Structure formats: C-alpha cells, structure tokens
View (cartoon, rainbow, N blue to C red):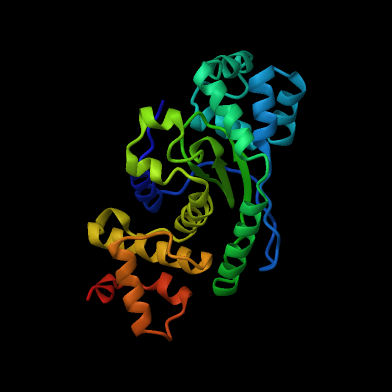
Length: 267
C-alpha cells in the first residue's frame, strides 16, 4: 500500500501543474450546483463482481477518469492494452482491497452533504474570484493512492482515503496525524485547497525560500477556511495571514493571491 504524505503532496502541487486532462465542467455561474459524479459506483461494481456492463460504463462514460486511474495512479499499464481489464481485476483482488471498496461504497452511499458543502464553498469563491473556473468533481477508489487528484478543471476524490481515523486498515499504514486528516470532514477542505493551489501556484517555486512556500500555502488554507466558514485548516502560517488580513481589511482575496511580497505577512 502506498502512503501519501498530504503536506508533501500539497508542496508538489505548488510547484508543478497536473498532467491529467479530465473534462471541464462548463459551469461559470457562482450559483451553479456542484454534484459529485459517481464514477466509483461503476468502478466498484466491476471490481467486486466483474460485471462487464460496469466496465463498459467506465470506458464509455468516464474514459478520461479510467485512463488516469489505470495509467497515472495505479500505473498497471496502458488503457489500450488488450490485457488491461484482467490486470485491473487482478490488482484489486486482494481481500483487504475488496473490503476497502465495500466499506467506501457503504460510507459514501449518500454524498448530499459533500455536494452541498462544495456548492457553497465554490459559490463564495466565485464571488471573490469571478474568473475562477468551477471544477467537475468525481468520486473514485484508488487503492489508497492520492486523496485528491486534480485534472484539467476537475477534482477526483478517492473515497477510500476518507474512511475515518480509526478505520482498521489505516492503523497499519498511517500515523496518528495522517489518520486524523483521513475523515469525511476533511474531504471538502482538501478538494478546495488542492484545486486552488493548482489554479494559483506559487510563481518561481524553485527559487523560493521554505518560508515563502509555507506562507503561500498559508494563504490558500486561510481562503479555504473563509470559504467554508470554519477554521478547519490550521498552521502558524495561516495565523500569519489571518493577522495580516485583520490589519489590512481593504485587501481583497484576489489581491491577497496576487501579492508576491511574502515579507509583508511576517510580523
């Protein structure tokens, strides 16, 4: 099983753009409803039962998601490989993974709360950042690979990475701090923060100091907290941004993101 360190993944996203080319949502209205597309249901049906109609749905209804899963996440071959279907089934035949799939589908049979929170968060972001493209969001099961996958104006949520801090399989592979973040309440904050970092990366990342990188991350996390209406993402760099914004009430969120003078955020 792969262990994904959330902070390292976030830092990497600040530096490079994602390669996955997933479909754009086409939604530009700040009031647009965001609803998670349930790619995971076709995926789990195929992986649990070998139902060929589910495989057809994966390939025809979600071709880009399926390519990203097979080639970029699982790395088990090319999607056009004549043997790839057999390889995909074999990869997930481990009993622990079968249990993981079943548990993920049970916990996330209903995602109305996630849809509501995503819609409200991105609605606020569109008010502050009118040019921000609204993403397409879909759910998947990635065998404990990346929690969030960012594509071309898209967000892929790995349901199997949000089954709760005390989920038995997590106890074997993740630290207490990592498990604390692998809960349902962090799903929407992760979606919003990873997406914002892909749209607003830190310029000249390679020559930046660690402090500048951390402060840029702090800006993103502070904005996420504002969009969600709660202080769920915490760090001392978020506190720095919070103090700055309280003393500079005329600074808009768009201006905050454009600001390149990170010395201004240090007391």
